[in-house]
Structure formats: structure tokens, C-alpha cells
Length: 173
Image 1 (cartoon, rainbow, N blue to C red):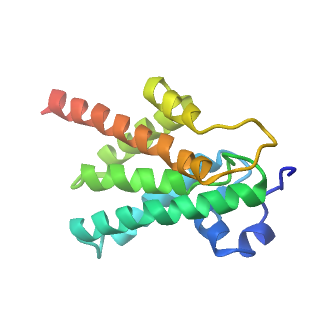
Image 2 (cartoon, rainbow, N blue to C red; image 1 turned 45 degrees about the vertical axis):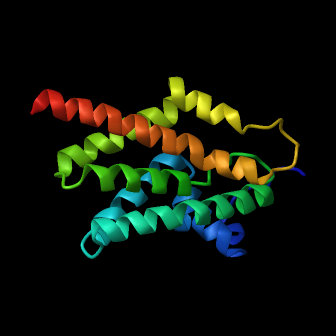
């Protein structure tokens, strides 16, 4: 299967595309992962006005299997194992980081955003390992494992972000 270009029309054709593409944030022509992370941060700030920590835990837990399904379907339809336009993984990861970090002011949230983006984009150490686990050769069919892999490296990046932020908080307090 040849790769398909992600467009607004493509996103509107299937509910999985809406979710996986971060309700349109993944359509950004430049840095869709960063735009998806910003969308996730903004959504967190708004939803956090109403959600309790337990409700956040449930939402994040439910978002992982839903995101796995949506990412798998969208990657299959796009014909590539880890499309840049799939940003649900960034959204879930930044929600996880902010949920654990809260309560936190703007500067800690900004630090969380920056550290997460570093780990997600540069893919040092454990993030590179997690990213490579589920990759396939171009042209091979996308399976549910590639859909999981889309999420997995971002969850590892979230874990690394939390370790760095915990260290920073310990040093500063």
C-alpha cells in the first residue's frame, strides 16, 4: 500500500482519524507533534477545571486503548507505521505528565512541555529503544503492534520527562 497524504478530508472520513490526528492538530504542516502536544496542554488546562485527579486517571487509562485503536486504523489508512500526523500519542503523554505534575504553575507546565518535546523529538536512550521496538520496513502492512508502538515511545518519553522534573523539583526545593 502506498502512503496517503493526511488532509482535512482524510481526517473527516473516519472517527479514528479524528482521534489519532488530535482533532486536527496533527494536520499542522510544520511540527505536528509539537502542535499536538500544545493542543493536549491546552485541553488539559481546560478539562482540569472540571476533572478530579481520579477522573483524569480514568480518562488517561481509557485514552490509551482508544488511542491504540485509532492510531492503528489511521496508520493503516495512511499506509505508514508511524505517521507524523498521528498526534494522539503526544496528547496522552502530555496529559499523563501534567496529571502527575499537578498542582503546578505555568512555568512548571512549560518546563514539562519543553522536556517532553525534547524526549519525544530527540529520542535519547530509552525513548529511541521504545521507538525502534515496533517499527517495520516501509511497504509492509501495519499491524496492531505498530499502533501500540506509536503510543509506547511517547509514554516512555513521558516517564523520562517525569524523572527529569522530579529531579528538578528535588534540587529546587
